[in-house]
Length: 476
Image (tube, rainbow, N blue to C red; front, side):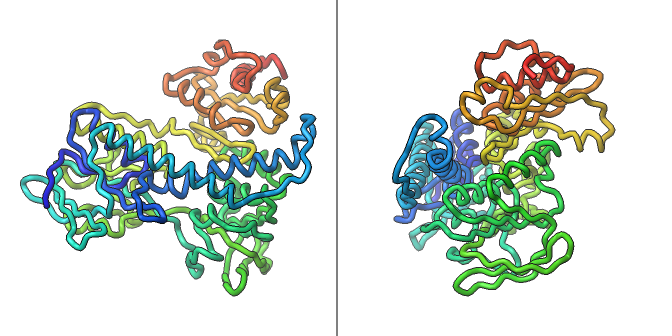
C-alpha cells in the first residue's frame, strides 16, 4: 500500500506536529508518523514533552506546590486546614488526565488541518525519482510505505543512562519513572542538578521525601547568570534540597534499595542509600531505528542528525528539527524550527534566532533567562551595565506572599541595547516573554523603563530593573 505526500514528518513531538500543521496551512499534503502510545495502545502524539516531560512535570509541580502551600503557607492568609492528607494516586491520575487532554488536542489539530496521521515507527526505506520512501511499522505484519517529496525528521531524544546503572523503572528511574512513583519515597536520590533533576527533586521534596541531588559539575546552574545561580542555591538549601557539587560516582548497587558510592568535591569517599534514584544527566538523540543508512543521511559523532543553520541535512529535501539536531533541547526551540522548515519548503524565509530562545526552570521560585549572562559578557570582553530589582520591593509579590528573588537586566554600556535578562522569582516563566519580545525588536533598557506597566503587577519588577540599569529605580 503506497501513499504519496508532499511532506512526511517522522515524530509528533513539539517540533514534528507543529511542522506538520504549518506545512498543511501552507497548502501541502502532509502525513505525520508517531509511535507513542497510551497504556491501552491508543495513539499518544506529543512526544517526550507531552507524555513524560514538560506537561506531566508541570502538572505534578503545580499539584505538589498546592500541597506545600496548604501545609505551610495558608495559615498566614487566615486559612486553617485540619487533617491535611496526600492522595498521591489522585495526584498522578490528574497528571495523566492532563497528558491525555494534550494527546487528544494534537489528534484534533491533525484532523482539523487535514493531516494524515499514522500510528507506528517511521524509518527510511530508500529513495527514487519520486522522492523518499518512508516505512511505517505498526501492529500489522506488513509495513506501510509512504512516498514523500520532503521528509522532516523530528524523532526527539531519550534519557541518558548512567554507565553501570541502567534504568529499571522500579529503583533507577528516568524522567518517565520519576513522574509515576506510586508512593512517596522516604529518601530520594537525584543524579544531575539540571532542569529535570531540580524539578523532580522539588516535586518529591514538597510531598515529603528527603532529597539529595548529586551533580558532577563543580558549579551549580553553570548556564545561568552567577547572581541567579547563587540565589537559587541559597533558596533551595533553605527549602531542604541537599545539593552536592563536584561529585564522582564510582558505583551504584541495586538490592532492595539503591546505594550510590561516590567521591565528593574534596575527594572524600561517601556512600548514600536511597529508596529511589532518579538519573537526570542529559538526553541523547533518538536516531536508532530511523534507518538513516538506507538513504545516506549523515549523523554526527554523537548521533545527532547533522544539519546546517536552516535545518537542512546532507540530503536534498530532508530536514531535521528539535532535540535530534544541534542546539538546546527545548520544546519551544523545536516548535520554532518546525515552523521555519515548513516555510522554507514552500520558498518562504523561516527564521529562528537562537540568541533569543528563553530558558525556564519551573521550580519554586521559577528561574528564567534569555540572552547573555554576566560571566559570558565578561569572557567576551563586552562592556555592559546591569540593574536588578528584588521582588521583596514589589507590591504584587508581597500580596502573593512570594517575595523571593529578583529581576535583572543587562545592557550594552555604550548603546544600552539589552543583552540579557535573568529572573528568579514568582512567575518568572511568564515575565521572561517581555524580555524576549524586547530583544527581538532590538530594544534598549530605557525602552522598557519608559513603558507603563500595570500596578500592582509582578511585571513592574522588569520596569524597575530597567530603571536600575541607569541607577534610577523608583521603588528600591
